Length: 180
Image (cartoon, rainbow, N blue to C red; front, top):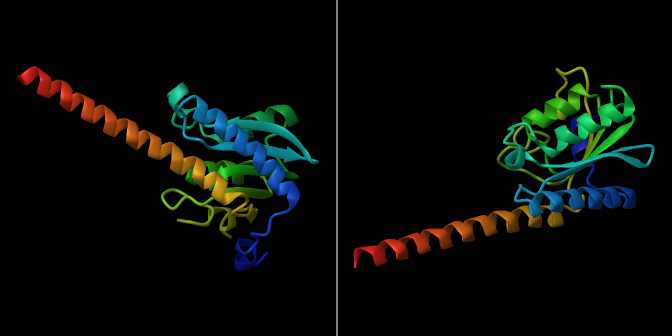
């Protein structure tokens, strides 16, 4: 598969959008518990066999990414570490750790929503899933419901910044009140 051809595959099917909507639901579950809103689902034969969302804060575990949790669940359900014939849908472009897990689990296709210019290793910073030095490569479809996926993250981090600003202002007001 030609590298440029793979990365121009941004025309999604209705089925891709439906499964990405399920990944978005997972991302919203993460957001509801204060986690970064990233969700993932793994599909085999047209059925979701694993669904997960970020749990890094809740579990205080650096590796508790949506993709890794979904891969773990899919391996358990299929009884194999090889997830051949599956598709991973994830709301944000995978990081280097998750890209490595995707390669190791032999997932042949990845569909993601929003690009990650700070840590994305499918297209933004590196193209790990297409590196010919690895013994496995993936077909990638990017930008599926990308605006919606990106908006989830933008709104989440905007909310965090606004809360921190309000907390800082309240702290200053308390300090000013103590000085008088």
